[in-house]
Image 1: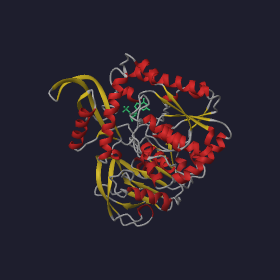
Image 2: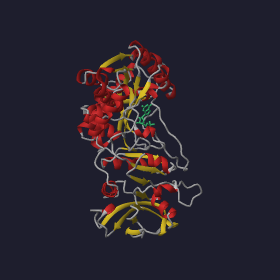
Image 3: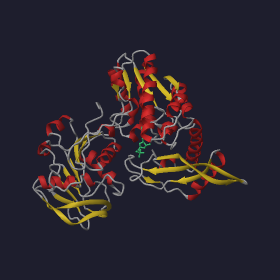
Image 4: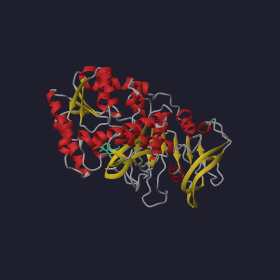
Length: 515
Ligand code: XMP
């Protein structure tokens, strides 16, 4: 992004932590980019990096096909920080020695150092770090010195001050490395000399200029889902081009309680955005009648959405751009675990094929942002917390949470149960500690007793997970009294439910949604 300052480039060697490193750099108010490890040095130079970070990686440096950077990156004259595999790499490539350790060092260790400048400025002389590596450096490359050790790693932190090259065997980006954020801050500010130029406040001004320049006097269409990404994209574009933006919001009958009112209140009443509201509940529920197979449900919902959206868009006359809330993790060229570069570009399911069909260009103003930055941007733009702080919600909505056949009655039942679960989570102050909380209505009935009466009603399952990026997830440990209160309220207040379960499956093997 122009005007964001010179970036710190994270070279991705296939580490699970590459994105985390890039996020931490941005948290230090410095723009970061993730690029594949094998990018030619000349291409890298064109990005004008202020510094380069070699990520960790799953391979050992001597493994067949181990990913290695273009050797000319060492000659760019740019500071380098090598993390884990990254430090072993440059130790190996610059003339040191790296050997397979007899035991893999994994877990907590204590870094001891007597350095108080550069990378280790203001770091306690003994500080907890998190190690995870198989190889170890046994001989330093010429020009390097040890700047920190741990009990089992005599070369835990090394540096060549002249080259401005630093390396650590541990992971400064994970929270278990207590002063890791400070170390990364030191690298970007003290070593690379970056200024605090990456803030959401600055981003708004730059993005507004860029959107205006790209759109000119033309028209933009945006599909609003009520989710964080499309909401923030719409608010940002509206700030840039006002009435040249029209949003279409399709109520597919599979939304959460009060969601359609919330979207209209925020966008039409508060932001005064041109909003087309389409009530398509009956259309979707009719199409889903009798369908129970999850993938078929998804297809029907996805295709119908495109159809309805297209019809509405046609009524609006020609639109030049289609806005999408695509985020940075969707566009990073990632490196697969085997070291081979692979491109993973997720397309948003809900507008599939529309831009080509309708002859529209794509406008993706969030494509450089991580999710937490999108939230910060939303706040900067004045969106209410109910919108920007909201848990993720799948495109097919309650269609994949009403397990089995989707009917209006079952959706209404689920909506009430879901609202109670979320209400209690909020009342107990737990909402932000949870990545996503949801209720599924199961295709099972069970016997219960309410008052003096035998009941034979529906069963629901609560699910709440913690996660970094939805790729893996763990079930949330609620205090038992919260679960008890939710179960009581659901059985008492929701007409057709008489039994409540709590799902304690992690991902993998379970997915977050049931279908
Ligand atoms: P799973 O269930 O695969 O979900 O563990 C991972 C994350 O993605 C969300 N999800 C979807 N989002 N369209 C979406 O926009 C979909 O079809 C879809 N399916 C799952 C899910 O809610 C979770 O956050």
